[in-house]
Image (cartoon, rainbow over all chains, first blue to last red; front, top):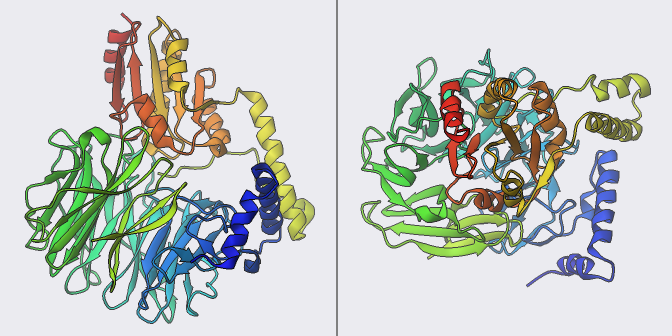
Length: 412
Length: 184
């Protein structure tokens, strides 16, 4: 199964020299490479999902997406570099990573502020990630039009990137393949002690590149929670995000950007009454299928606490009573949701003090009733959030971890 | 989320450019050297935060035996935490007898920024720690198995070490109410 270059990588680690020697060698290599501002990608060997073949050992916060040909594409950030690779065997082995940013940058990454990748029907690969620039943090984008052999020089997404922070970008393709990116933007903040960011977005035109003007769609976004996006039947984006409502309540709202000049429609959909001035670092999830909306979120509100799911049959106007899921004794966190016809899938992580567990739960009747939750993987080391992906072969959870590496786990 | 970087007395990149022109490798190496030099100068000014790893929480609690204290968990990337700092600074000034333990939920690469933020808020003389394990969830769990990691998170310990944990920025009144409980 494993190819020869992977074996080389493995032998290196288990060789006669101690681990420290190889770490030092790697460090020297990274220093030399970054000093030259160009990584020769031939030095990077293709390998398995454990990142041993990566110059600086890969990263925990990795995003993945299926391409039109069923290949699984990943964007992998390291401290100074962002790479893209792909797998043709559902995540067991990966291609040699291709460098996106040839100029080293200080990459900014966390569970909420994560890189993004999407591949359109023609095979164009869009990548976003956050890095330090003139501002502490800026969302950059890059596109490959030659099947991932090369990437365009990354450029800031925000037209005010030099003046204000932009971060927590969310890259999504609608059904016709239009790339949208939504992000947190601080350009309208005169006083950083006031609460809440703005959401700005832009579209990336496959032929002409970036749509130059970023458009604002909302204010009072909770500073530390990433935005969730899905597309309705008419291919228009629907956002779910944590907002700051009067009284410092950090509950969720839906936003529907409208066509030019019209104000976005925006309304509150969760009523947990979480009054807190803090960074929950815990964004929600949304899926839409056949105009039915499915949402999942975390709260510590006075009304309810933990993870919850709800569905709407009238395009988000009304939602079902929140359904609690996850074991409250094990800190259930970071849900994702997927809708495929009548089949709805939820995934999330739990932690028992030693191990992180990956759980999944399914409904076969559009979210009305649910089968029992199942533990489908675990890890005793640092783990990323889980994400649901699908291709013609099925539905999977994409889950990355420091120890086990990348895993693509099928949902049966 | 992200905040202004800690301010250096000058921009090392600009200085390099001025001094050494366009020699790329030299520039990169020198900028690293400048960075290390500035780091070391800065570090001499105040004690470095201690490394918070497995067992450190128990160690902190034990070192404050029979004393009330306040454990403040924060991060350089947490806007709410930074809003809270001015008030903490004023509390520290008005109640120097109260032990404040500052724990940054960042990693070692943030030490310079941690120290700058603490110094700016006259909290440099407080006991200071920084997360020193990759799996920060384990550290969180050791501190409090019911805490999801939201920041700021403040724990108030009375003399007998009965503990109350609160998430989010607190008002002066909320602090005062907690002090009234733990200091008596």
